[in-house]
Image (cartoon, rainbow, N blue to C red):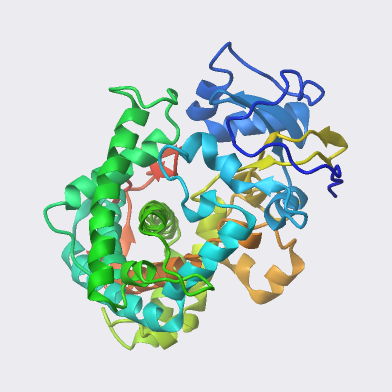
Length: 458
């Protein structure tokens, strides 16, 4: 359990450096001059994390992306950092070095009272009325697109990425993307890639330079759209809800804040759902018996091939939700979560000083045999209510936890359930015998070859 020093935190921005030797007492490695362990981490984060943990234990020091940091492993570490009972761990300063130039002031980069106020204002977009509207848009858009996949030998990842962007435009913006669609998609891709670029300044011809240019384009686009929505009023799409969101005192959220939140949430929905849907399709292709189970469930709930999933029936797709949760366990879309300690604390027998960059690894805990029997095996039955009740509450954290629990998690469940119902009532998902794609871990997991699958009509 954490023990906090009484003084008020002195660290107010991620760029403030600790004393040079502040973390020398924590076991670990600093790696190469300047680069540290960045290249080893990017090459194979799972292999590197396993090596460091086996060598140094559940608390170790690392040096990557120009900063020393402390990694904490285990469900207790997840609870300490994510639940954050004492408000000691800054999400804004944790993500700041990676995202400050790209997604500043997005909901994930706010802390404490500011985060609470903006989350409350934005939550209006996820209430039952708007969610019913999104469900209708998702059913319509997914059905139309999935119907074109018949008999195709295709790369699933780019196909679902484009579909997810189009769905976000329909559900989030309330209009189909026009001629700017490709530019919007490119801007998001460039910004996400820039988050793990080795060069951290927006120099020409670097990933960060392209990412910052992408952000500039999106600011201009969403500023125009915000002003348009306010002038028009109303609208059930997410952007209209954000544009007219008010704080507790009744004041409208400033235009710049609406834009920042919209850019961040579209990125999160665009990339994390793409990654997690791809993981689930891959795992179902490997495990045909689970395709059959989910198909039978979808047919029973919807009543026929390609039929929509009614909003009130989403909760009946219990096996689909369990399979999705198991996919998120095996391949979490956010493998590690950074924070910054505002005050000194203790964990695992170590004193960790104020100002330390602290990370936890959902990916590592999701594979920990202390919590999961045969952790590398795909087994959705781990997520029955009885099994969930037996586990540590923070042994499964793909959506984060505490105050920063993903605000769009129910939207993610809804989109994936509709997607699976549309695919599985129409097709058998097939892969070549022995096919196993290699996965790129950063910045968000994806198969390097795009995931080659065939949708064979039933």
